[in-house]
Image (cartoon, rainbow over all chains, first blue to last red; front, side, top):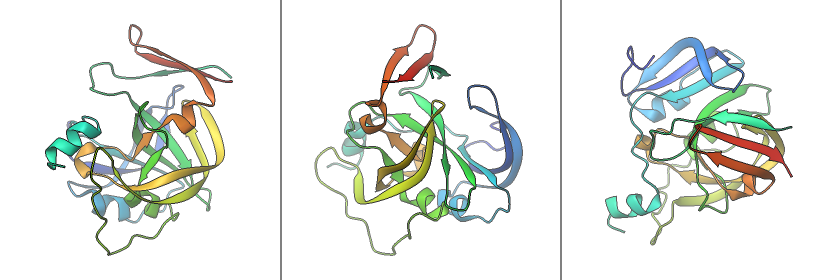
Length: 70
Length: 131
């Protein structure tokens, strides 16, 4: 999924997980770089997963404050 | 029940997968980060809205001073499963998240203070069992 949809948010339906509850497969129903669009995209399945395929920029709240010059 | 949850040691933080069951019985899977400095678990309002647990407001969420996220409400999750442990009626903070974080929640100590937790970076696993 990361190779096919780089740096995007994915809405995945009918997903499967392994014994450690890690996502291992599913059907990409919707994808976009816009998190809001993906979060609100329709899906009929009872099993819906959200995944971001890019590198997380989260560096803790100190980094967040620095970024926004708080 | 003792569980062993693998995580990617190459990341800056401990990213884990977790599940929220909404009021209609749908099981929603998200990514989150373990935040041992946070007393409370925070969820992205965008994804809580997706689960039908909050309504998004068009009002601008104010950015708080100091080293805080943008918490602005509380909500009770019907069911939350992290590291194989399920908690019912678990209260979390509703927060505005930066989309570039790539996560839907910061998992705080309110969850982990219920467990004996071992973070083993050598094996890249988080071992947890109820107290």
